[in-house]
Image (cartoon, rainbow, N blue to C red; front, side, top):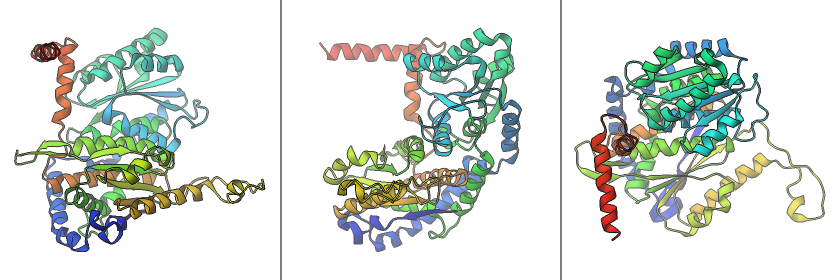
Length: 463
């Protein structure tokens, strides 16, 4: 698998006191092995399931059969979901079909993906106005089957479909949810929607290689077999004990050390590829929800968290790098590079007589992009800013699947090193519960009362 991890710019030899010494890495090797064994136990016990997803051949085959059945009957796949039920599919679409909004004209042979992941009415209604119901296939995705944002948007889209198609609307809807809980599966059975189910031991942010990501990907024409094959190859590497072979464990250890020993509480994910830009947003959720925790496994208050920031090269060299170079040295930078592009973008050899243009003639945009990445890493290193680089040989289904799996394993390993539960999300749940109360959901009156008390406190504080 053509993915490399270069951590030399995290070393004291390159960034001085802000880096990690060889001795520190050597002494921490045991921490990495403990993390590997700890996570292996969670997977072997059945508590955590995402490492098994690339090997679910029957699920992949069922999704491919369905995609073949409906192929040519739609020009738009409308995905309704939020968080892990939307970001993974969007990341896959951007990486493998091209960055939005430059994918080219959509058609029944090249359907587009429209992701409705917010309840902003101007966004939702504008999306509906851009689609034709008779040429739209809807995927509604919610593991709990009770997400307020997804449920509300789905009701609007459902009515929109039914107004145009009547009873046939049900044949244009796919539900991806839990098999035995939640109201979405109840509705899907009542209405006769096509359904794909999610494993209970796979959380949303770790579900990109489950039907959550694979169903919309297959419907959009992506090769999901190659995607999971790449992830399967990476999974085998992620169980290796050797840090030289296990790229995810090595990256987790280096990020753990620079965070905990050098106080780098912000990680900038810096892809130098528009195709990987969607993945940076997927990564933000993965890293933030998994590692931002109040308590550790001993129930001690720790308030852990490393804030993930997404930056795009070269765009954000002209908007953020000034801060990164001269601002607080509280960040670690993780560059994502691509070695080979599908089109190098050759620059014409036109002669203008102007040096600012003529030296670029005959070269390529790919060379310039990678030169910009290398130059930025060198500049950050020169000012003592620790950074590292993942380098993908190319952006194709196999490499994307492998890279996604690598980052999920890295996150899981880092959670073990921190002695936290990387798979719960209590901080998210309270906001969801208040929303249920505010929207008048039956059984959540107590939360509505708590919110009323909060408003009363606000009013008193403003007097």
